[in-house]
Length: 405
Image (cartoon, rainbow, N blue to C red; front, side, top):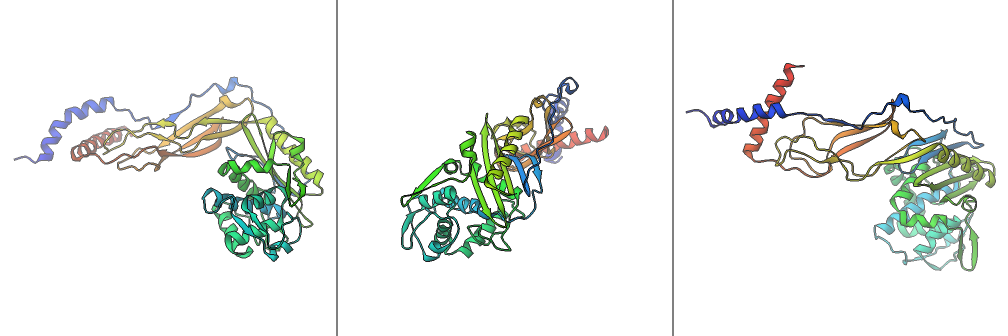
């Protein structure tokens, strides 16, 4: 008596031959290629040279760097440090670990901290929301120390927390010793790292980001202005933070949004308040004038449906788990092409979120971005006969393919 597997194979063979004639496996999907020779390329000048030690210009959505100079040089960040202090407060608020109305006791250490102040008093109990505004808008060192003590029990453990998050965010040229930015030999950051941090502040906690454009803050009857001069000069600018010490010079992390394009500039080591504002404006103006950011795909968009072997269904929805933005020179959007490189051996079970390929975006011959392609849904293993059928079909496909290699 012939084995069951032999009998099944005899019955399946005619079906398989039909399937083979119908099978096509285009696992490389590509956007239509334009006739780029007929498209005039826009002319873009070199980025401006600034009177600063270090700078960078980044698009907040795509992450593309449009201009830079010494972006990874380790420099004293002064009060730009407070961007991380504020980020950690915002993170705790979003996680519901603390409340905006929590009352924070003010210690003598916080009260005695020198430099810029919110002017809290020893023994005061101040809401978290007020202290956060004091950190962001008027750069209060006293508010920063108070929040560090409240969240971590002291400035040293809080600095350790800051460093852990710097690592998680990919800030490879940053190390914190305190939450204020007051000088210390081992306290440093870089323009690139600060742009990464600003990008996370803007994108991770957009509701909190609105406070960064506030021009004045009053506490205890004392009104103080935001030191970011661009908030008064450019309506598109809505953040982030200034800094100054003698060692750091005058620094500014700024962000602006025009026509759904958001840019982040970081300028470090200028020689005056006016210079940091002017040099930042040069970078932002350059970026908005010569570049545009396009949204290519929405989060969750199905970009391809490749074959799945041995599953309870034959196709897998593949796409991206976040919006895909690309920043390109103006008037060159027709040169964008996207290529999907998807695994040819996708076998069930497949978990939702599992990477099954890569998308590469090109502008002409230049690669301007890559994104992982993910399974948008799970695919469970099929039954015994479905898995057997797929195994045999796959064998014949591989056999036929091998004959033509």
